[in-house]
Image 1 (cartoon, rainbow, N blue to C red):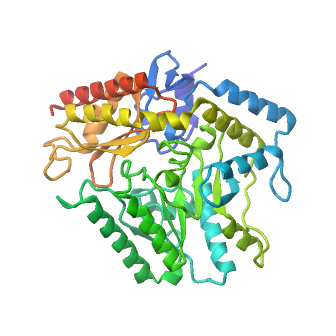
Image 2 (cartoon, rainbow, N blue to C red; image 1 turned 90 degrees about the horizontal axis):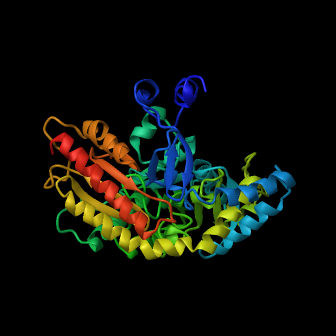
Image 3 (cartoon, rainbow, N blue to C red; image 1 turned 180 degrees about the vertical axis):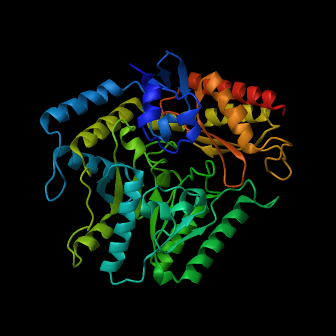
Length: 462
Protein backbone atom coordinates (compact mmCIF):
# COMPACT_ATOMS: atom_id res chain seq x y z
CA UNK A 1 0.00 0.00 0.00
CA UNK A 2 1.54 3.35 -1.04
CA UNK A 3 3.08 5.10 1.93
CA UNK A 4 2.21 2.24 4.26
CA UNK A 5 -0.48 2.11 6.93
CA UNK A 6 1.62 3.97 9.49
CA UNK A 7 2.16 6.95 7.16
CA UNK A 8 -1.48 6.97 6.10
CA UNK A 9 -2.51 7.01 9.77
CA UNK A 10 -0.09 9.80 10.57
CA UNK A 11 -1.53 11.89 7.74
CA UNK A 12 -5.25 11.23 8.20
CA UNK A 13 -6.06 9.51 11.53
CA UNK A 14 -6.46 11.64 14.65
CA UNK A 15 -5.48 9.25 17.43
CA UNK A 16 -6.59 9.08 21.06
CA UNK A 17 -4.34 10.82 23.63
CA UNK A 18 -1.36 10.54 21.24
CA UNK A 19 1.61 12.95 21.49
CA UNK A 20 2.60 14.97 18.44
CA UNK A 21 5.88 13.06 18.13
CA UNK A 22 3.95 9.96 17.10
CA UNK A 23 2.60 11.88 14.11
CA UNK A 24 5.92 13.44 13.14
CA UNK A 25 9.03 11.73 14.43
CA UNK A 26 8.46 8.37 16.11
CA UNK A 27 7.65 5.01 14.61
CA UNK A 28 3.94 4.21 14.79
CA UNK A 29 3.26 0.53 15.54
CA UNK A 30 0.74 -1.14 13.25
CA UNK A 31 -0.86 -4.26 14.73
CA UNK A 32 -2.55 -6.63 12.32
CA UNK A 33 -3.26 -9.86 14.20
CA UNK A 34 -3.86 -11.22 17.70
CA UNK A 35 -3.66 -14.59 19.42
CA UNK A 36 -4.32 -15.47 23.09
CA UNK A 37 -2.47 -12.75 25.09
CA UNK A 38 -0.36 -11.46 22.21
CA UNK A 39 -0.64 -9.16 19.22
CA UNK A 40 1.55 -9.10 16.11
CA UNK A 41 2.68 -6.12 14.06
CA UNK A 42 2.82 -5.92 10.29
CA UNK A 43 6.36 -7.34 10.26
CA UNK A 44 5.22 -10.38 12.24
CA UNK A 45 6.84 -9.34 15.52
CA UNK A 46 5.00 -10.55 18.62
CA UNK A 47 4.13 -8.36 21.60
CA UNK A 48 2.70 -9.59 24.91
CA UNK A 49 -0.37 -7.47 25.54
CA UNK A 50 -0.01 -6.70 29.22
CA UNK A 51 -2.85 -4.17 29.13
CA UNK A 52 -5.61 -6.22 27.45
CA UNK A 53 -5.92 -3.57 24.76
CA UNK A 54 -7.06 -0.88 27.17
CA UNK A 55 -8.15 -2.87 30.24
CA UNK A 56 -10.83 -4.50 28.13
CA UNK A 57 -9.93 -7.57 26.06
CA UNK A 58 -11.03 -10.09 28.71
CA UNK A 59 -10.93 -13.08 26.35
CA UNK A 60 -7.66 -12.17 24.72
CA UNK A 61 -7.42 -12.55 20.96
CA UNK A 62 -8.39 -16.17 20.35
CA UNK A 63 -12.19 -16.05 20.38
CA UNK A 64 -12.81 -13.48 17.66
CA UNK A 65 -14.08 -16.02 15.15
CA UNK A 66 -16.67 -17.44 17.56
CA UNK A 67 -17.90 -14.01 18.58
CA UNK A 68 -17.76 -13.03 14.90
CA UNK A 69 -20.11 -15.88 14.01
CA UNK A 70 -22.66 -14.48 16.46
CA UNK A 71 -22.16 -11.03 14.96
CA UNK A 72 -22.57 -12.35 11.40
CA UNK A 73 -25.78 -14.20 12.32
CA UNK A 74 -27.22 -11.08 13.92
CA UNK A 75 -26.24 -8.92 10.96
CA UNK A 76 -28.03 -11.35 8.66
CA UNK A 77 -31.15 -11.44 10.84
CA UNK A 78 -31.49 -7.84 12.06
CA UNK A 79 -28.49 -5.52 11.59
CA UNK A 80 -30.07 -2.58 13.41
CA UNK A 81 -33.05 -1.64 15.52
CA UNK A 82 -33.57 0.84 18.32
CA UNK A 83 -34.77 0.36 21.87
CA UNK A 84 -37.04 3.42 21.57
CA UNK A 85 -40.47 2.00 22.47
CA UNK A 86 -39.53 -1.30 20.77
CA UNK A 87 -37.05 -4.03 21.56
CA UNK A 88 -35.27 -7.00 20.01
CA UNK A 89 -33.94 -10.30 21.37
CA UNK A 90 -30.24 -9.41 21.86
CA UNK A 91 -30.94 -6.32 23.99
CA UNK A 92 -33.63 -7.99 26.09
CA UNK A 93 -31.66 -11.19 26.66
CA UNK A 94 -28.44 -9.32 27.44
CA UNK A 95 -30.22 -7.07 29.94
CA UNK A 96 -31.62 -10.20 31.61
CA UNK A 97 -28.17 -11.82 31.74
CA UNK A 98 -26.53 -8.71 33.18
CA UNK A 99 -29.24 -8.51 35.86
CA UNK A 100 -28.49 -12.13 36.79
CA UNK A 101 -24.79 -11.33 37.24
CA UNK A 102 -25.19 -7.96 38.97
CA UNK A 103 -25.33 -7.74 42.76
CA UNK A 104 -28.51 -7.16 44.75
CA UNK A 105 -31.52 -5.52 43.15
CA UNK A 106 -29.70 -4.07 40.14
CA UNK A 107 -32.17 -5.44 37.61
CA UNK A 108 -32.59 -2.66 35.05
CA UNK A 109 -30.12 -1.97 32.24
CA UNK A 110 -29.76 1.07 29.99
CA UNK A 111 -27.33 0.52 27.12
CA UNK A 112 -24.75 2.94 25.76
CA UNK A 113 -21.74 2.60 23.45
CA UNK A 114 -18.87 3.05 25.90
CA UNK A 115 -17.73 4.10 29.35
CA UNK A 116 -18.02 7.86 28.95
CA UNK A 117 -21.57 7.56 27.60
CA UNK A 118 -22.40 5.21 30.48
CA UNK A 119 -21.30 7.75 33.08
CA UNK A 120 -23.16 10.52 31.25
CA UNK A 121 -26.31 8.39 31.47
CA UNK A 122 -25.74 7.73 35.17
CA UNK A 123 -25.41 11.48 35.84
CA UNK A 124 -28.74 12.14 34.13
CA UNK A 125 -30.47 9.19 35.78
CA UNK A 126 -29.34 10.31 39.24
CA UNK A 127 -30.51 13.88 38.58
CA UNK A 128 -33.87 12.75 37.20
CA UNK A 129 -34.41 10.37 40.12
CA UNK A 130 -33.98 13.14 42.67
CA UNK A 131 -36.00 15.69 40.67
CA UNK A 132 -38.84 13.18 40.39
CA UNK A 133 -38.80 12.82 44.17
CA UNK A 134 -38.97 16.58 44.57
CA UNK A 135 -35.31 16.99 45.57
CA UNK A 136 -34.53 19.63 42.96
CA UNK A 137 -31.55 20.92 44.94
CA UNK A 138 -29.65 17.64 44.56
CA UNK A 139 -27.44 18.49 41.58
CA UNK A 140 -23.95 17.93 43.01
CA UNK A 141 -21.69 14.91 42.57
CA UNK A 142 -18.73 13.76 44.64
CA UNK A 143 -15.87 11.88 42.98
CA UNK A 144 -12.29 11.16 44.01
CA UNK A 145 -9.05 12.94 43.25
CA UNK A 146 -7.11 11.66 40.22
CA UNK A 147 -10.06 9.42 39.23
CA UNK A 148 -10.90 9.09 35.52
CA UNK A 149 -14.52 8.72 34.38
CA UNK A 150 -14.38 9.69 30.69
CA UNK A 151 -13.83 12.61 28.33
CA UNK A 152 -17.35 13.76 27.43
CA UNK A 153 -18.62 16.90 29.15
CA UNK A 154 -20.34 15.43 32.20
CA UNK A 155 -17.99 12.48 32.61
CA UNK A 156 -14.97 14.79 32.33
CA UNK A 157 -16.50 16.95 35.04
CA UNK A 158 -16.38 13.96 37.36
CA UNK A 159 -12.70 13.40 36.61
CA UNK A 160 -10.25 14.14 39.36
CA UNK A 161 -7.43 14.37 36.79
CA UNK A 162 -6.78 18.07 36.46
CA UNK A 163 -4.51 17.70 33.43
CA UNK A 164 -7.39 16.13 31.48
CA UNK A 165 -10.08 18.59 32.50
CA UNK A 166 -8.49 22.01 33.07
CA UNK A 167 -8.20 22.94 29.36
CA UNK A 168 -11.97 22.55 28.95
CA UNK A 169 -13.17 24.24 32.13
CA UNK A 170 -15.63 25.50 33.17
CA UNK A 171 -17.36 22.14 33.11
CA UNK A 172 -20.52 20.81 34.76
CA UNK A 173 -21.25 22.73 37.92
CA UNK A 174 -21.35 21.12 41.33
CA UNK A 175 -18.68 18.40 41.22
CA UNK A 176 -16.52 18.06 44.32
CA UNK A 177 -13.55 15.76 44.90
CA UNK A 178 -12.36 13.89 47.95
CA UNK A 179 -9.18 11.92 48.67
CA UNK A 180 -8.63 8.65 46.84
CA UNK A 181 -7.40 5.52 48.62
CA UNK A 182 -3.71 5.71 47.75
CA UNK A 183 -1.73 4.75 50.86
CA UNK A 184 1.83 4.95 49.54
CA UNK A 185 2.29 8.57 50.63
CA UNK A 186 0.19 8.46 53.78
CA UNK A 187 2.01 9.23 57.07
CA UNK A 188 4.54 6.62 58.19
CA UNK A 189 3.08 4.11 60.61
CA UNK A 190 -0.53 4.86 59.74
CA UNK A 191 -2.58 1.66 59.77
CA UNK A 192 -5.12 0.69 57.11
CA UNK A 193 -7.85 1.23 59.70
CA UNK A 194 -6.58 4.74 60.41
CA UNK A 195 -6.49 5.50 56.68
CA UNK A 196 -10.08 4.30 56.38
CA UNK A 197 -11.18 6.46 59.31
CA UNK A 198 -9.46 9.52 57.79
CA UNK A 199 -11.04 8.99 54.37
CA UNK A 200 -14.55 8.48 55.74
CA UNK A 201 -14.25 11.47 58.07
CA UNK A 202 -13.11 13.66 55.18
CA UNK A 203 -15.95 12.45 52.97
CA UNK A 204 -18.51 13.08 55.69
CA UNK A 205 -17.07 16.54 56.31
CA UNK A 206 -17.38 17.34 52.60
CA UNK A 207 -20.99 16.14 52.54
CA UNK A 208 -21.87 18.29 55.53
CA UNK A 209 -20.01 21.32 54.16
CA UNK A 210 -21.77 21.13 50.78
CA UNK A 211 -25.15 20.38 52.33
CA UNK A 212 -26.36 16.77 52.20
CA UNK A 213 -29.59 17.83 50.51
CA UNK A 214 -27.62 19.23 47.54
CA UNK A 215 -25.75 16.03 46.66
CA UNK A 216 -27.19 13.69 44.04
CA UNK A 217 -24.58 10.92 44.01
CA UNK A 218 -21.11 9.75 44.92
CA UNK A 219 -19.25 7.97 42.11
CA UNK A 220 -16.26 5.72 42.79
CA UNK A 221 -14.41 2.90 41.05
CA UNK A 222 -14.09 -0.18 43.29
CA UNK A 223 -10.42 -0.23 42.28
CA UNK A 224 -9.33 3.16 41.00
CA UNK A 225 -7.38 2.87 37.78
CA UNK A 226 -5.86 6.34 37.44
CA UNK A 227 -3.25 6.88 40.10
CA UNK A 228 -2.27 3.24 39.81
CA UNK A 229 -4.46 0.32 40.98
CA UNK A 230 -5.77 2.01 44.13
CA UNK A 231 -7.63 -0.49 46.33
CA UNK A 232 -9.80 0.16 49.40
CA UNK A 233 -7.65 0.17 52.55
CA UNK A 234 -10.08 -2.05 54.49
CA UNK A 235 -13.53 -3.61 53.89
CA UNK A 236 -14.96 -0.92 56.15
CA UNK A 237 -14.12 1.78 53.60
CA UNK A 238 -16.87 1.01 51.09
CA UNK A 239 -19.20 -0.10 53.89
CA UNK A 240 -18.68 3.35 55.39
CA UNK A 241 -19.30 5.11 52.07
CA UNK A 242 -22.52 3.14 51.68
CA UNK A 243 -23.56 4.08 55.22
CA UNK A 244 -22.98 7.79 54.55
CA UNK A 245 -25.02 7.59 51.35
CA UNK A 246 -27.91 5.91 53.16
CA UNK A 247 -27.79 8.42 56.00
CA UNK A 248 -27.95 11.42 53.70
CA UNK A 249 -30.15 10.12 50.85
CA UNK A 250 -27.28 10.11 48.34
CA UNK A 251 -27.01 7.59 45.51
CA UNK A 252 -23.84 5.50 45.22
CA UNK A 253 -22.59 4.86 41.68
CA UNK A 254 -19.89 2.25 41.10
CA UNK A 255 -17.92 3.05 37.95
CA UNK A 256 -17.07 -0.48 36.82
CA UNK A 257 -16.00 0.33 33.29
CA UNK A 258 -12.71 -1.39 34.14
CA UNK A 259 -13.50 -3.55 37.17
CA UNK A 260 -16.67 -5.08 35.73
CA UNK A 261 -16.78 -8.52 34.11
CA UNK A 262 -14.01 -10.32 35.92
CA UNK A 263 -11.01 -8.01 36.18
CA UNK A 264 -10.69 -8.52 39.96
CA UNK A 265 -11.77 -12.17 40.09
CA UNK A 266 -15.49 -11.46 40.58
CA UNK A 267 -18.10 -10.50 38.01
CA UNK A 268 -18.22 -7.01 39.54
CA UNK A 269 -15.73 -5.14 41.67
CA UNK A 270 -18.47 -3.90 43.99
CA UNK A 271 -19.38 -7.49 44.84
CA UNK A 272 -15.66 -8.28 45.16
CA UNK A 273 -15.32 -5.63 47.86
CA UNK A 274 -18.67 -6.39 49.45
CA UNK A 275 -20.76 -3.26 48.90
CA UNK A 276 -24.07 -2.63 47.17
CA UNK A 277 -24.23 0.37 44.80
CA UNK A 278 -27.43 1.95 43.52
CA UNK A 279 -26.02 1.97 39.99
CA UNK A 280 -23.14 0.33 38.17
CA UNK A 281 -21.71 1.80 34.99
CA UNK A 282 -19.97 -0.64 32.64
CA UNK A 283 -18.32 -0.99 29.23
CA UNK A 284 -15.03 -2.56 28.03
CA UNK A 285 -15.21 -6.16 29.31
CA UNK A 286 -18.94 -6.66 28.62
CA UNK A 287 -18.02 -7.68 25.06
CA UNK A 288 -14.25 -8.05 25.58
CA UNK A 289 -14.12 -4.87 23.47
CA UNK A 290 -14.78 -6.97 20.37
CA UNK A 291 -17.69 -4.56 19.84
CA UNK A 292 -18.28 -1.15 21.48
CA UNK A 293 -20.89 -1.42 24.24
CA UNK A 294 -21.54 0.06 27.66
CA UNK A 295 -24.38 0.95 29.96
CA UNK A 296 -25.86 1.54 33.38
CA UNK A 297 -27.32 -1.10 35.68
CA UNK A 298 -29.77 0.49 38.10
CA UNK A 299 -31.96 -0.69 40.94
CA UNK A 300 -35.66 -1.30 40.50
CA UNK A 301 -36.29 1.51 42.99
CA UNK A 302 -34.53 4.10 40.85
CA UNK A 303 -36.10 3.10 37.54
CA UNK A 304 -39.62 2.67 38.90
CA UNK A 305 -39.42 6.08 40.57
CA UNK A 306 -38.40 7.67 37.27
CA UNK A 307 -41.04 5.81 35.26
CA UNK A 308 -43.76 6.85 37.73
CA UNK A 309 -42.66 10.50 37.58
CA UNK A 310 -44.19 13.35 35.60
CA UNK A 311 -42.02 12.71 32.52
CA UNK A 312 -43.05 9.05 32.49
CA UNK A 313 -39.74 7.78 31.12
CA UNK A 314 -35.99 8.02 31.53
CA UNK A 315 -35.44 11.25 29.62
CA UNK A 316 -32.33 10.12 27.75
CA UNK A 317 -31.61 8.30 24.49
CA UNK A 318 -28.80 7.15 22.20
CA UNK A 319 -29.03 6.04 18.58
CA UNK A 320 -26.76 3.06 19.21
CA UNK A 321 -27.96 2.22 22.71
CA UNK A 322 -28.76 -1.50 22.77
CA UNK A 323 -27.48 -2.03 19.22
CA UNK A 324 -28.46 -5.61 18.32
CA UNK A 325 -25.08 -6.55 16.86
CA UNK A 326 -23.13 -5.26 19.88
CA UNK A 327 -25.55 -7.01 22.24
CA UNK A 328 -25.18 -10.28 20.30
CA UNK A 329 -21.40 -10.01 20.64
CA UNK A 330 -21.72 -9.38 24.38
CA UNK A 331 -24.02 -12.36 24.88
CA UNK A 332 -21.52 -14.62 23.15
CA UNK A 333 -18.66 -13.07 25.12
CA UNK A 334 -20.38 -13.80 28.44
CA UNK A 335 -21.23 -17.32 27.27
CA UNK A 336 -17.56 -17.98 26.50
CA UNK A 337 -16.41 -16.44 29.77
CA UNK A 338 -18.72 -18.74 31.73
CA UNK A 339 -17.83 -21.79 29.65
CA UNK A 340 -14.08 -21.21 30.00
CA UNK A 341 -14.23 -20.25 33.69
CA UNK A 342 -12.54 -16.92 32.98
CA UNK A 343 -13.59 -15.14 36.18
CA UNK A 344 -12.58 -18.18 38.23
CA UNK A 345 -9.23 -18.14 36.44
CA UNK A 346 -8.53 -14.63 37.65
CA UNK A 347 -9.49 -15.51 41.22
CA UNK A 348 -7.25 -18.60 41.15
CA UNK A 349 -4.19 -16.95 39.58
CA UNK A 350 -4.32 -13.54 41.25
CA UNK A 351 -2.09 -14.63 44.17
CA UNK A 352 0.46 -16.11 41.74
CA UNK A 353 0.48 -12.91 39.68
CA UNK A 354 1.05 -10.90 42.85
CA UNK A 355 3.89 -13.21 43.87
CA UNK A 356 5.69 -13.02 40.51
CA UNK A 357 5.32 -9.26 40.22
CA UNK A 358 6.50 -8.97 43.80
CA UNK A 359 9.68 -10.78 42.80
CA UNK A 360 10.21 -8.24 40.02
CA UNK A 361 9.64 -5.37 42.45
CA UNK A 362 12.14 -6.84 44.92
CA UNK A 363 14.75 -7.38 42.21
CA UNK A 364 14.44 -3.76 41.09
CA UNK A 365 13.97 -2.22 44.52
CA UNK A 366 16.28 0.61 43.51
CA UNK A 367 13.55 2.12 41.34
CA UNK A 368 10.33 0.39 42.48
CA UNK A 369 8.78 2.27 45.37
CA UNK A 370 5.42 0.52 45.51
CA UNK A 371 3.60 -2.40 43.91
CA UNK A 372 -0.15 -2.45 44.46
CA UNK A 373 -3.41 -3.70 43.01
CA UNK A 374 -5.74 -6.66 42.96
CA UNK A 375 -6.85 -9.35 40.55
CA UNK A 376 -5.44 -8.82 37.07
CA UNK A 377 -4.82 -5.10 37.66
CA UNK A 378 -1.45 -4.13 39.18
CA UNK A 379 0.75 -1.04 39.19
CA UNK A 380 4.39 -0.27 39.94
CA UNK A 381 5.18 3.23 41.21
CA UNK A 382 8.79 4.14 40.47
CA UNK A 383 10.93 6.38 42.67
CA UNK A 384 14.60 7.11 43.20
CA UNK A 385 14.25 8.75 46.62
CA UNK A 386 12.64 6.07 48.76
CA UNK A 387 12.56 8.19 51.91
CA UNK A 388 10.64 10.99 50.19
CA UNK A 389 8.78 8.51 47.94
CA UNK A 390 9.44 10.53 44.82
CA UNK A 391 11.45 10.53 41.62
CA UNK A 392 14.54 12.66 42.15
CA UNK A 393 17.34 11.46 39.89
CA UNK A 394 19.97 14.10 39.24
CA UNK A 395 19.85 15.20 35.63
CA UNK A 396 17.08 12.76 34.73
CA UNK A 397 13.46 13.80 35.09
CA UNK A 398 10.70 11.24 35.40
CA UNK A 399 9.50 12.18 31.92
CA UNK A 400 12.94 11.76 30.40
CA UNK A 401 13.33 8.36 32.06
CA UNK A 402 9.94 7.19 30.78
CA UNK A 403 10.28 8.57 27.26
CA UNK A 404 13.98 8.04 26.75
CA UNK A 405 14.58 4.75 28.54
CA UNK A 406 11.58 2.86 29.96
CA UNK A 407 9.17 3.02 27.00
CA UNK A 408 11.91 2.07 24.50
CA UNK A 409 12.94 -0.84 26.76
CA UNK A 410 9.39 -2.14 26.94
CA UNK A 411 9.10 -1.94 23.16
CA UNK A 412 12.45 -3.70 22.78
CA UNK A 413 11.42 -6.68 24.93
CA UNK A 414 7.98 -6.81 23.30
CA UNK A 415 5.65 -5.84 26.15
CA UNK A 416 2.62 -3.58 25.93
CA UNK A 417 1.58 -1.93 29.18
CA UNK A 418 0.63 1.53 30.37
CA UNK A 419 3.46 3.85 31.32
CA UNK A 420 2.66 7.33 32.58
CA UNK A 421 3.72 10.06 34.99
CA UNK A 422 1.26 10.20 37.88
CA UNK A 423 -0.23 13.32 39.45
CA UNK A 424 2.61 13.42 41.99
CA UNK A 425 5.33 13.24 39.35
CA UNK A 426 6.36 9.59 39.66
CA UNK A 427 6.48 7.09 36.78
CA UNK A 428 3.72 4.47 36.86
CA UNK A 429 3.82 1.11 35.08
CA UNK A 430 0.43 -0.62 34.89
CA UNK A 431 -0.32 -4.18 33.85
CA UNK A 432 -3.88 -5.36 33.34
CA UNK A 433 -3.65 -8.35 30.98
CA UNK A 434 -6.31 -10.53 29.33
CA UNK A 435 -8.25 -12.58 31.87
CA UNK A 436 -7.38 -15.83 30.07
CA UNK A 437 -3.74 -15.51 31.13
CA UNK A 438 -2.17 -18.77 32.40
CA UNK A 439 0.64 -19.44 34.87
CA UNK A 440 3.06 -19.67 31.95
CA UNK A 441 1.82 -16.31 30.68
CA UNK A 442 2.35 -14.79 34.12
CA UNK A 443 5.91 -16.11 34.12
CA UNK A 444 6.48 -14.51 30.73
CA UNK A 445 4.91 -11.22 31.78
CA UNK A 446 7.13 -11.05 34.87
CA UNK A 447 10.22 -11.95 32.83
CA UNK A 448 9.50 -9.22 30.28
CA UNK A 449 9.02 -6.62 33.02
CA UNK A 450 12.25 -7.75 34.68
CA UNK A 451 14.17 -7.35 31.42
CA UNK A 452 12.62 -3.97 30.65
CA UNK A 453 13.34 -2.56 34.10
CA UNK A 454 16.94 -3.83 33.86
CA UNK A 455 17.50 -2.31 30.41
CA UNK A 456 15.97 1.04 31.37
CA UNK A 457 17.88 1.28 34.66
CA UNK A 458 21.18 0.34 33.11
CA UNK A 459 20.86 2.76 30.20
CA UNK A 460 19.76 5.54 32.52
CA UNK A 461 22.68 4.87 34.84
CA UNK A 462 20.46 4.20 37.84
